[in-house]
Length: 108
Length: 113
Image (cartoon, rainbow over all chains, first blue to last red; front, side, top):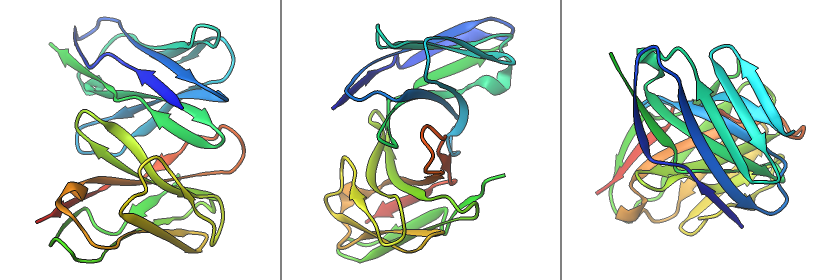
């Protein structure tokens, strides 16, 4: 089975950097996705990690350590529009198992 | 851009009714998924399908069934709706190639009275 753990909520200031952590325990791990979900909207794809290391995509970066069952999403130069829930999801046999999500609130 | 369209944004039904939620994708994706999302529980997989007429149970299939008669359409059926099925329902699709992202519809907020 899967066990995916994310902290529930954090508040950060506009322009700051925030790190969202995700730990997981799963058999048959294939990779890890990060999604962003604004209130009342569909989740949208942010990043995907299959190998250990850091993947950078503009203001967002995602890191994976397979041996530690750990990933983080780094959001730089926070903007008000980054206020959203951030979901990590691990893949196994074409299925995704989602964490409960981390709500990020950006304040001026 | 991938477009996943769910037939209703909001739906109100009564206990015991048979409810159909429809989902259509326009990118020829092989995989389609139905999730429900509840506060504090996150996204949970109900059913998924890898191909036409093929279906597999997810983590919480009880009380639900699905139909995939055409590649682009995946229907979720609540055989006899109950109040504990009040939830946000999200449909998603993806290519079958390993490790492709899932693309989500806007969701259907279903209330069972």
